Image (cartoon, rainbow, N blue to C red; front, side, top):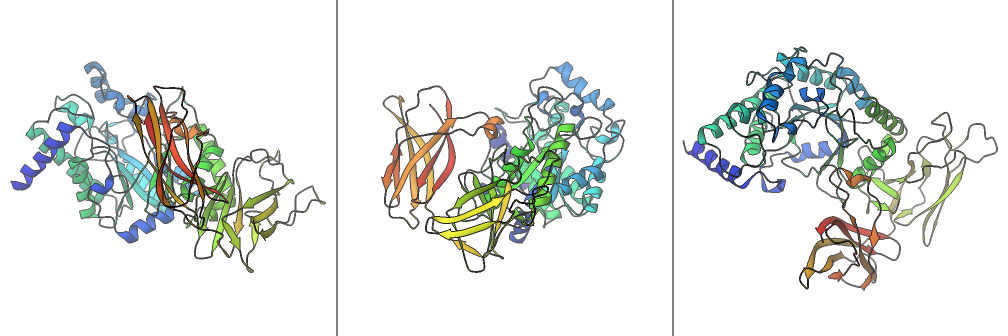
Length: 547
């Protein structure tokens, strides 16, 4: 009875305050360190958002919140009767994921709507009571394991159908506590569903809990760790930025979940997809900062992937086939990038991979020169372009395809040619990757922190604040800030143009401030501090402020 009372008390707090986005470090984390390290080596995974409301092409689950009684009745009782993803092939999707360089897949077992994609005894709202009539989750698990990929589940502790069946308003934020009896039924439902998921499908590698932060989510975590101690809980235990990536490198495991377009589930119209090139850039940035990228697909109602999503994955697959070693089993370098050149690091082989981005029109056979300031070669060093022999440019017998390099006082100078023919028209818009072996850091970079902005003079004056946490190997730095209008939750990754404040001279670890000349008020801005080392620039994390 004491445990029961405690659970009720926790839920009272949760539903009174509303479920807020929380710092996972404040909650239970029983992830084993060795399993987290294993997870970090995976690097790249596929997220699959699929449910019966994909038939409408609307946002998954959330159309229930604020909906009329008529809508909810037809949504729960009629829409499942026409859900028949007869062309779904778990094997084809797993094969494409593997070809794209993905090492794991995370499948939506149940989203917030409460519709279960497995043969469950806990609710009639499940895949077995549709024309499809098969356990789709079992098909996914078998195909993913057969492909040699790690098996991951997405599970929502929130359940809109449960609220609907219990005569409660469908919503995510509750200003008043639910009745005690309802709370207990809620917890029991979650416990039974998590028990089914952990008991019916063998060893599950990863689980992603979405929503229900607080006692609902904690209940689910306890169940899965109790039944499968080796499982890795991502959201709910580690940082999982959504629709963005961390602003700085991290030594702790983290995972970014990103959509190809603007929506998680299938969106047949009014969709705007990122290009394959942009998705590759996001993968590079994520790996350069030490994270995993979980890239989402949303199958059509018949189970097939939309044409543009498949096309993007195949473009990524072509790039990965050439450059896979630069994103697999790698760690962050001493800094993530020097402007448009990004880095990953293989410490075992003392090899740096340099990704040459933002060069969409590099003609095949053309030689380009690059200067890298953070890398220092040794007598054993070699530099090559991944995928190329350095011996031939097809149909250009007089073109020298070799890669040359020279370490000078100002940095590492590299001269290379784009030689490989990837497309029939001889064009290739995606990043070329340099492999630089047996290297060491050429400098010790500074470390900088972006602090919260402040207001003064009746909130009419905005001040940016930063901190030099480490000066590195320089006695004099220039510090300042970059800022831009916040483009939006989904649109942030399309935004790339920053404005810059003036700089101040800094010679020691200290806090500093700058007043930006922002003309547009009433807008939300992203801000990041920077420090100019004599050789390169280092950035702090990105924060937001409304002015």
